[in-house]
Image 1 (tube, rainbow, N blue to C red):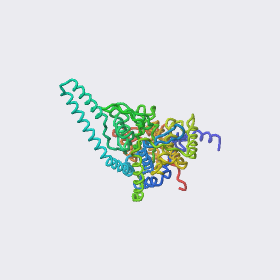
Image 2 (cartoon, rainbow, N blue to C red):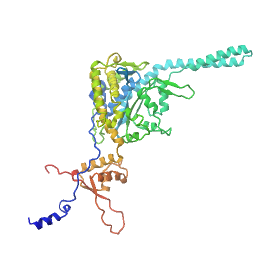
Image 3 (cartoon, rainbow, N blue to C red):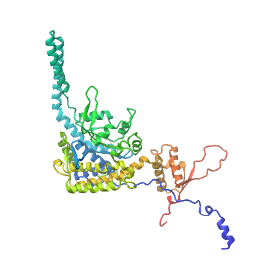
Image 4 (cartoon, rainbow, N blue to C red):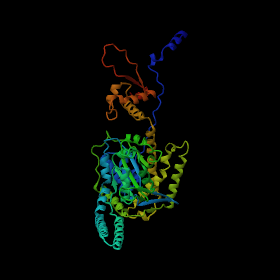
Length: 514
């Protein structure tokens, strides 16, 4: 090739030969491949039910699995504690939150997993009926006797007699005031206010469970009714710190070791709102939850799944009901100890946690949550132990195999917590940008108009065309798409053409063998 021809070739615009030049796109925030719930870590009767519920409802096993831990914590919360080592003790109540979009049959899973608890609750109400009736009658008679004595004292003519009758009336009034009527037993509450939760704790011997297929409880904590965040009882109820309960018309009560369990299924966007609750992070509420963010099966569900067998459902009901009833009347928590081998497993897990908390460690971004990771594993171990030995677990130490299963669940929740806290701190446009980029890849679009893109996406995620703007802007900033210059207007009026975009060549790689 002559020198002149070579120079002329170099002078050509590269785009006139090869098309637009693209730089390497900048990746969006990394999205982890999250592990599925380790069903095999649960005792057989519980794992079988989780797997069967997930299959029949065609939902991720994470939902039924986290609820399984929640129902165990409801049965044993406030009635058992794990002595890890020395004075380190962990109660066995848990806070779990599973994030799934609407349409994932959360209510159906909740009904299947919690129905034995509600049946036990009904049984406890029936069993307590005679005792409550006797207490109500005794209290009513005592109040009547005190009122009658007060009337006699007021009617007495002689000062000496009046003084004597007054002393008797005061004594009877004090006796009547000290009498209490037991509340109806309640194991599970729905979305309750902090004030109602505190009252339930006082009435239910220091334990209560909040289980809901919605995330309204976080709006309540954020101050829907009070106008200001109110999370004190939720913080103390997880840690077991003494809570003071003020009730109208009564003296303040102290709940020495409150045990609140929360098992929630929420929509993914609720996670963002949780992160914005004033004080939720700083005071440690976010760090108390075990999070799960499974992949929805909607759109690829088996329409003729295997149904839950009668044996599986019966075993689940029998074991869970037996454990709940066995622990229902305990006032002093059972202390669960570890075998030396289980202690060695726990200590090894602690070393891993500690090594990853420092600067640059994998758990440093979630240090508040990770600082509670080992305690959560101990709590899970206590629950798995009681589920493995529902008839006499309080008389046996926790074994190494149970602690190992608890650490596997700890690793599962760690992976999901890292993802959830990433989402809480990320630009809201990140998630929508990921959705658009996934759509472009699946459809292998080398170009598109904004209107075409809008028509191809879900109205649930993008109700209006303007909702695409933050995602497209972010994708353009990262080099994944490029808006074409608008064509010149003809002066004829009418609606301007929809903006057109080109996509990065890596979105539509050549098909091998084509």
